[in-house]
Length: 474
Image (tube, rainbow, N blue to C red; front, side, top):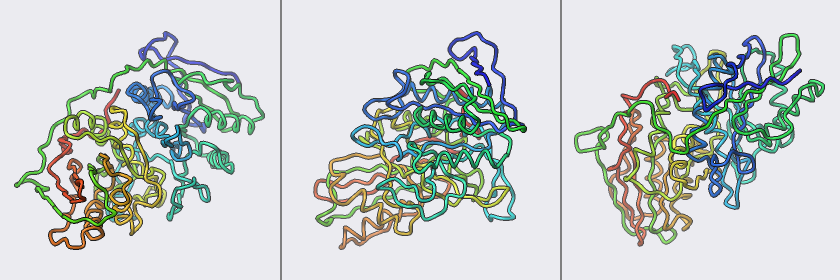
């Protein structure tokens, strides 16, 4: 049960042979160590936000290619498990640990999944360039201050930083006992990864020569379990040396025009005066939709698809000079979403795409990043709860926020704001957000007297119809 250490030439150095790829006939438990404040390579994590830096994002993009090609041998992944962000709050500001999800997202988009489209059971199956990320809470294990899920996870359980009540151990045991060969990828910080490796080693009689200490961000650990039940440890070293600059996409991104009098959506403006006393003052919220997520109507795995990765990675460039938020918000990616039907039956998914859409923008601009965790986005009361959270009580007075959300919720959020805080308002309600529109930005402003203006004059300026179907390659 020895340790095989490999390195990859062409990714920042090293001249050793290309590493052996794992066998698809084995159960392969693959552990990718994402950086956090305690264990990282210098320059990968911003100490003030606990988020990845440009360099850390670059490393994740390069690591995805290495993982897909050199470890999986281009095989499709079976499952991807990532850290539940709210189980690892960092710094005195309690920033969620989004690094594990960001670190494995590019890899997820290099894989494919087959789901039904509109119509559900019996409708045609469509293969999309995307893979779901499991980051939801197990039953009975929800962090303090986080809403208890109303939907069962049904196989979308993520990784708990603290292994509360042995949930991570149970997850690993379930994967091993299911005895389905293939590739199971786990993305978590070193502290949690080390505990996961130790648990598996105990199951196999402590015969695996595990690393004694953190070896750096380029290492991937794989425990391969053969059909005979024997386990071996393989340690990969990608030898990646990422640039410290923000990633450059391999191809230009086509531009799109913002709404105008003759476009769809068309321009609109809502104004309302005389807000109630508890409404915020001097607040601006820029509302954007998550990135492209549906190759056909009804197809949904909680993630966005390959085309969406082009949008998200280009977002810092697209929004430069248009908006200047001071903080970024989205919904907790651990929330459970009723997605499309898998070949093997219905499944729920972790709703990761809104939060991952704005992560590159937060990274590029070193902005504080927060998750909304006190209510579920798909709760019928969500529009009112969202309106109250962002526009009531003074918490966000004198603030400018970028908010990534679900597009069908924006009109009822604005309508809830109008009905709750502008009792004398007479005028149009918020228009529907077109289902094919991923580009528009709604700007919501409250002035120093609490007067409201909402419009859609801004846009990201990215042509969704011209984005490649597959994710960019790095």
